[in-house]
Image (cartoon, rainbow, N blue to C red):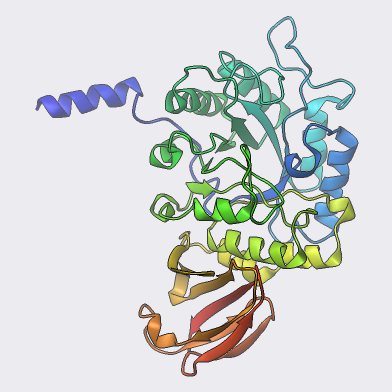
Length: 388
């Protein structure tokens, strides 16, 4: 009885469970974010241009819907009433006007701030202003909040993020809540009741193998996702950070691999390239319907690492309706020949049709083994469907 009473008190106090808008992210969110290319060099005309291109390029029809303005939109100080103020030079018409423009394109509007006293670039943070800021975001028409973790002092991550989550819920405008806590306090263990997604690593950069103090190449970010698959699912996603697809530090092959692997991971697909300079080849990657369908599969399972041997990684993702996705990734600096014996994949029961995602064609069935060459840093990306 004492245990039940204690649990009841804890539930009433709100110290265990937060409130969030359920059902907003039943599949991983898709959109575009300004940070990876532009950092704080942002302005309203550029954001409008990006929104226009998301529509005209076919990205909107492919599922990209959020346009997220990252750090640097704020003025250096709050106003006399304590409200956040957009930088009048960068955003002279204000954030509501920008949100209205984004909404007029059939898209959704996202914004960035920070759980600390200041953002990572020294602009006013949200600490102590959570409910005020949430009401302001609601009045602007914000649909997505990315909330960072700089200048937080000794604050407890779980309680701090819960406070902002409760504030968003109290403001009564449904908002997808993205925790950008970098995985320092294992948000996958407590984030599901607070937010819709949470970062699992430090910031990604457009490099395959590099590992800096703050910025990680895609290979290192990928490694840090191992073992986290049990925490991911509809409305609660592990976030290995935004896409570097199309940015100059990655080759076209690496961009294709990056996109393939993030689709396998059921990661949020937040493009971060300059869409105004996007090549047809990069657009083709970002809008590959079969890859996106694997990412957006309603079962919501994150791929798990099936094999790690020398320079060979094999990821497996269970899909709805008895389908599977399998991705081989060559992390080495030389190509190699992959011999695929389907009997080794013991989870496959019966015969399956094999579709090569990037060749966009059926290449056979699992009744016949395959021998395929995989170039350096490239992938084989297959969808397997039960043969009827």
